[in-house]
Length: 269
Image (tube, rainbow, N blue to C red; front, side, top):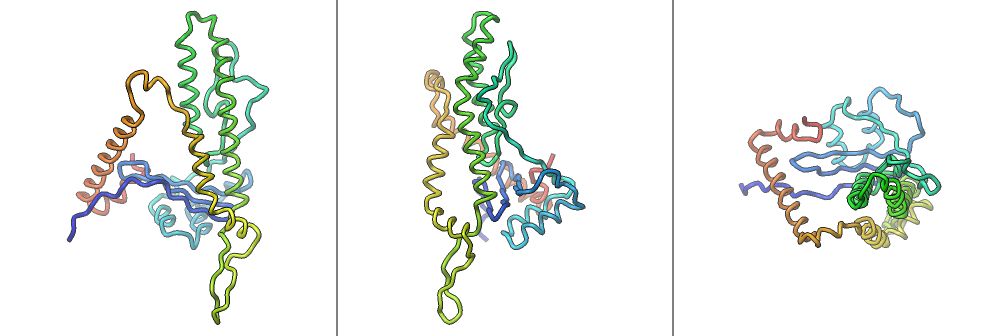
């Protein structure tokens, strides 16, 4: 038989439907993590089995979803309600020599994966400002500058994250499509106003995503080039490391058999 080749690192798999969606992400070393996003009212956690509950909600969806659920123990599945809040336009993040960063001052929906990213950007800007100070008396002014530098971008990302969340949960459905029915007559499959709208704007989504992600990932430390470090080199080294980790995990799974394959999950300690 032909030799086995290690599975490539993959982009997140996103399965979207009316008022719910499921995300499966490769986190390296043969492990995955998954999320089920649901439009539920607050305080709706009382159920005997989260695993059975999700299995029923996603009945008829991709086998990949049910494989992820089957390999996850019920006690490892938790419901975590998500909340954001409007940008702090009228309320500063700092008091004296104390300040906030990340979700503490600009919590956002996780749909664009920007909570941690914005916290790191905050830390970078804050570090640069503080590194230029000559005395502790200058700290309050530096923290004020940090707030004004970061507020426009974090507010924009908060807004984009909320739009993405509301769009998926409230304004997404299976796209309507024209199929041939019995007797060779055309008929509309998945009729409905939202389904028609999704079918119309679906061709525009790649362009929307391109513009959106160009903005989200437009922030890069300018000092890298000053230090003779190219972003392309960092990207190359990171991909090389990730590939080596994936190949090592695949070799370990082959040696350990099916039991090792199932154990190599994001739940492994």
